[in-house]
Amino acid sequence: MKRRDALRNLSVWPVAGLAIGTTFPFDSVMGAPAPSPARRNLFKELGIRTFINAAGTYTAMSGSLMHEEVLDAIRSTSHEFAMIDEVQDKVGEKIAALCHSEAATVTAGCWSALVLGTAGVLTGMDPKKVAQLPHLEGMKSEVLVQKSHNSGYVHALTNTGVKMVEVETPEDVEKAVNENIAMMWFLNYAGPNGKITDKDWVALGKKHNIPTMIDMAADATPVENMWKFNDMGFDLVCVSGGKGIRGPQSTGILMGRKDLIAAARLNAPPRGGNIGRGMKVNKEEILGMYVALEKFINLDHIKQWKIWEDRVALIAAAANKIAGVTTIISVPAVANRTPTLNISWDTTKVKFNNGGLQEKLRKGDPSIEVAGGNENSINITSWNLQPGEEKIVAKRLKEELGKASV
Ligand SMILES: *Cc1c(COP(=O)(O)O)cnc(C)c1O
Image 1: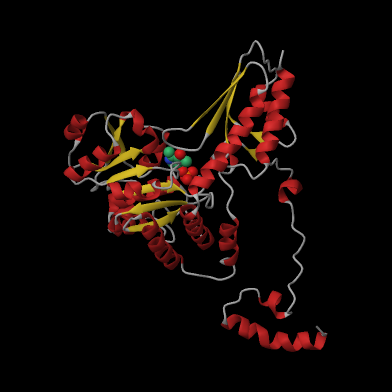
Image 2: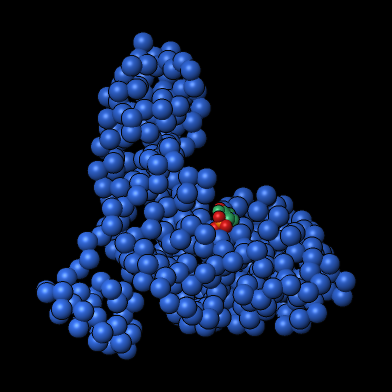
């Protein structure tokens, strides 16, 4: 294109571009795509170690990797402004429809879904109560929890000022119920350890007219879980966006009863003067979460599962070539449901010095992270592996186990 033509087009196109909502006027104006600027490799630039993640969706390891569609959603919504409440309203409706809930909102992780959901139960739509948290004068102040569910995650709830009251049996619940009980909380991964099932927990809540909440942060798989607990009747369901769903790592979803979601949002950004103001999610993350959820629900989960299984089988086969090594592939009953490979070794036949196998893989090239490392075993999952990385993990494992054989 001649310079004169280019200039003439410049005077016309930006307006037309705006009219159709184009947000890259200067790329499209010139007709030809602009050469993409050289990408900075910030990991290299700052000397940050990257690694093959054969461990799992650990927050400390940056969770999971977003699909291209999610990155597109983030990029394509970065160039214009929108009102956060409107983004939340529209995305909330879509998420609610996908997950069979009355309403939904995107939060800053499952943790903040737990905080905001609890806050909403306590305050309802009363702005004075919202301003008052975590001081609970005039509000209910206790949450029922099964003893086996009373883990570190309850700190999300106690942030709002509530105290946890432990129960073990349905009879305990009957005895504990009083005017002060704001909510009944269920931790999905602790389900098999408790004496009261999820269904019975919901039934007890309904009987006593106490809202129930479930934390299913790391239970995106199987995909039916995305609506199972809403269908079951939990009033609030909390899930991580950046674990199995592969949304932005800083997101989560709070879904459930319409009145409770509205109340939770009073305690959340963009409003201030509340306990949730620090739990901000911007439009790109909210929309990225929506696209990730949609993609996740529409995945061919049978095919996906087979890929995960084939990868761990390939890694197990390589490790099994070394004498004294035992491999077991299993699937956790709850939480992080994905084929999980345990590799253990007879320490009289395979001997590691200086930190063991986990450390050798971490320090190797490429660096590989595995989970649960101790002196005679490690755990591996394959859902965070990129295609082909399973072969690298298999090769490195065989090398290190081989070197340590005595
Ligand atoms: C990961 C996790 C959380 C916290 O979720 P984030 O999305 O990281 O905020 C809460 N509860 C359980 C059981 C978890 O596994």
